[in-house]
Image (tube, rainbow, N blue to C red; front, top):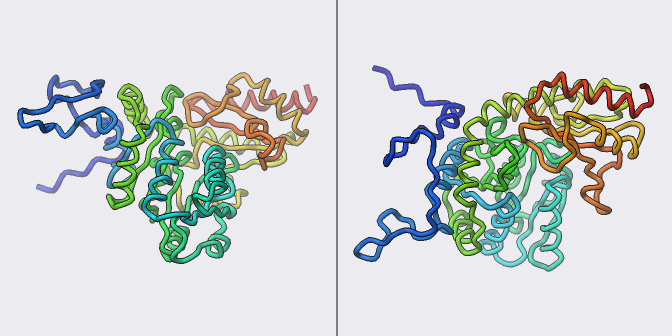
Amino acid sequence: MSEPRPPSPATLAARALGRVDEATGAVAPPISVSTNYERGADGSWPQGRSYLRDRNPTTEHAEALLAELEGGAAAQLFASGMAAATCAFEALLRERGPRPHVVAPEAMYWSLRGWLQERAALGLLELEFVPNGDAPALARALRPGRTALVWAETPSNPTCAITDLAEVAELAHRAGALLAVDGTVATPVLTQPLALGADLVMHSASKQLNGHGDVLAGALVAARRDALWDTIVNERVKRGPILGPFESWLLLRGLRTLYLRVPASAAGALRVAEFLAGHPGVSQVFYPGLPSHPGHAIAARQMRGGFGPLLSFRVRAGEAAARAVARRLRHFSEATSLGGVESLVEHRASVEGPASTLPSDLLRLSIGIEDPADLIADLSQTLDFALGRL
């Protein structure tokens, strides 16, 4: 008899790894909310758990599933995406010594960019920005034996710049550096950075991994359990930014529908992007699924099953018209975040403030799982109003 076919990631996600609660036989994952655990007669902890800040069964279940979906050796959940990302850098500071050299993309998560700039200003690290996906610029920025980490984000937020992860991983490793990737927009459904050579993947799990806008969470997934990973685990215990049991359970529930939601949002986003690209009121569309996008060929090779839910576009009539469009849309909520089941719109330049480098006429969209025809009709009517055609 032949060996049984191994389950696909979609099956593993839907069945939450197929685990059934041993105590009750429950198929739905239970929530374990205890903050502490009883010692054995010899003073040890027979289950390997002593306190919630260290380990929790519900959190471990979600971590095990995410590590499996990313093809990683281990995962850690955090109280937010920022907590996950900053913990990785704090661990790097401990492992690589004072003032490690870090190369990051020009277009990246705004809050993390600001945090890195603050740390650089304090002299804790050397920070260098390069254009997203510009391999020659990255090669020039790398300092062999000195660069500790290359940070990548693909597709980037909000302009959807694409980075060739395999190429960047080769460059980073040749210089003795690690590659960490913000995989929030793509998720493991569309891209697995570890399989392309990355050493670490970070997620703002509040976004598509949860998918319902009701959890604040972050995650790190490692290609291997090494000294840096041990430091990350230790840092989380000491600093305490662990994800609570209920939030872990909500995240686990969201992960079970990940392989339905992500392709649906990506398909809707492509249809919306194609519509916007042909509308006279739009001067530019940023979406890697469009053949006109400069990173389309790389994205088509690197991403599978779609190009993500995020896109941005510029309103030809300018900032005032862009703001009016955001306010008048009926099927888009004007709110911060991305990757939920509902569609969102945001005027990013005003959100980022005076230091933003984004065009003032740019709107960012996160496409949910609504009927794309409804979203397109809403955009069409609103853009026509902004153009004064109604």
